[in-house]
Image (cartoon, rainbow over all chains, first blue to last red; front, side, top):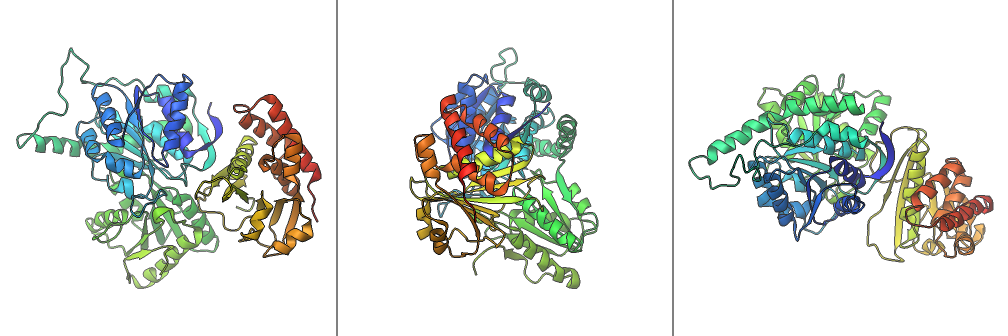
Length: 393
Length: 190
């Protein structure tokens, strides 16, 4: 039996961590993540988890301690935001290349400067090539569900890669919502015990982690990471189905919302998806054929699922909550366009950058994006590819 | 979502606008409804103007944008009326509830949109008399229930008890409950 609670996104993920009960958690504060580990540390103080809590002196140390613990054979977690993730950087790559199934909630926040503590996706976007799985959350419920599923995905023997579970800073992390929490023993049973095949502390079966690996084998190891990433999507679909049976919530890789007969579609991720669903309903009620696709799993990128969903669409807008300088638009736009172009699909596409630094995104802005696609449907042409929503001229 | 109610709380840092916004949503969730609450993050200083927001609905609340057109505005501090337009974004359907020692006419003169439906309550006085401190936030929840019938009083009081029991003694909780009940009785409308 699940339990319904009013929780902030941070609290919801802290409950997931309590139920996951990791062997080790490295803790370092950064807004807006602080409350998450604060809550988890309270669970620890109350004796509700067996976790070894490591209070470190920086995010670089947080990721290092997590890597060390995971290499030693522990189920290890940490959490961060923005500049904290940036400070972890070199160890973030080491975690994935050592094939350590760490799960790390990242509370999305803009990277400074100028100094800003509010939501956008620029922090995790920078880590999109780091070899981590990245799963985005629409609301507090999904953040909780994703955190639980991530353990099972990362630890799958064909994968052994770390996962970032993201939730939008403040908009989700500090917003109280209705969240359904599974029973503790349901989560325990779902994720199972963690028994790595190799670990530093397994003295009967010695292994080496982090060895020097120059021209001779570095390349082959990168190839192995590439192959492991290739195994991820079917495993996520499988884990998602199992989780669906347990919780009633089966998410998959992407979510299609009123897409089947839609002519105009937008693609987006994170907390703005819910606002966009309400906008789609408003426009549908006015007889407009619109829909949206939510990307849940951003890394690895769900090529096939997206391509299939877009087959019949006449005009597409991709909404990016991050900016990429010196390219052809935001990161999601670039990925989607590369995917379509590589498959010979000629679909006129627009890119909208929105919500940077916590700028509010409302239904009126999303409606603007849909409206601008009308002309694209008519002419088959895009006048200007990269555009901005909710920005002063 | 026809049954969506959006509430905006105005207060000053320390008056509990955020706590009240959260408590209201939690009580709604407790009652089986959907609730969402979030503060507006700015400089967090005692005395600085702050806002809190609550959404309540019978259906899932998917929207995550700011509340622009609140159905209900609750003002915890009458001195805010001299510097802030608390009617911003309200419509002729909106309800405004004030914690104040002023009269309705005096309040109305300070409002930019003076035709709104208003309720007044001296919540500071009630809080001082019942709880012993002039903290108006929970008291105003009683006024809100009377003005909107948003949920059952019992549900609200259960939610309040649940939220406070980790922090406060039963005696303090009982005082709060008494203050909320008095607010429900004493709030004045047109």
